[in-house]
Image 1 (spheres, rainbow, N blue to C red):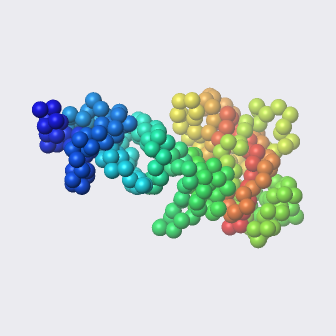
Image 2: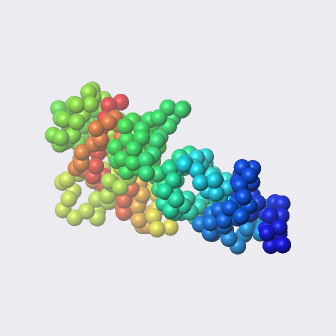
Length: 306
């Protein structure tokens, strides 16, 4: 009776074992595989329910269970979390990562959410209009993007692009002139860059000049005024238009900071060309730091040909 009741039409148990039934696998073997997958996905107590009575996250786990019981050589997941709310999406990301680690099965995961790509992927392929732009580890894509599309796509808040011109070993930008280290100039020359360049600044490379002790000489200082402040709890994201001399029209940049009063007056900020740029093309610029909303300081420029 238990066996017949468990296989009543429409239950989660039958749903997960449906493909095995079509393959005419022995029912005892189906039961074993379904129970094993249910334990892995924490669905054991839900096997006698109907999918219509489950939450969105539970339904997604049932769908994964249908694939797991077949013991495939690879999984293909096409935006499995796209229709879940934000909280469920975070929970399911953890579930998918744990599942992949336990099963050790190659998984191809398609998503438009860069957070999912960066947290779940061992290697990430960024595509645009069906053409692969770059393939690499998440950290490689973030630190060394090969073109402007990847540079502007990876990272939150996204990088902004700042035009610059290379003259006499110095980079002239709307924020001021930057003396480039010899190693940076060599990489720019190796890339075949001309006079006009695009500068990229990572969000975390901006700092509040008022909070930097004895390091102002290491970077470029400029004033900025916050126009929009988005509070995100432990961090806030202000958006600002620079007050640097003759900034290009429509040149906006944003950065992250720790909470601070939004009414502090404008103060100078610092930007230092301390590190080596990527070997590939352009980086973008934005700010992220523990700065006041009035100012920030950047410490890592990167350059690449337009």
